[in-house]
Image (tube, rainbow, N blue to C red):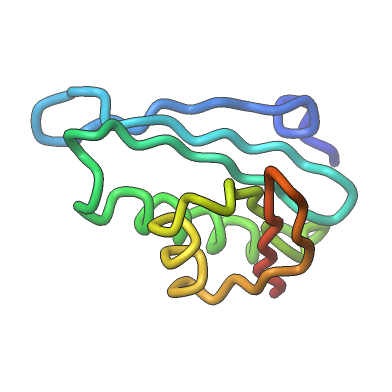
Length: 107
């Protein structure tokens, strides 16, 4: 059964479990057989592994869904930290555009 919330897009807060502070957010949207992911981590929380952990969880969740075959992420080509993170997680570039590159993690 289709989840209308994810099909229409869903933005979730990333919260620090220890103190309840906002770390950032993650956006998910189902399109055909893949999930688009977008994420933002506050500057004070960057480079602490939060984005890695969140993306890893989305990949694991996607694997558990019968109708999902991949996770896609659009990244500004100048955002080298995010590109390195996606590559570290096993994403491959599938499309390059002037203002956005698209990376794919297929199951």
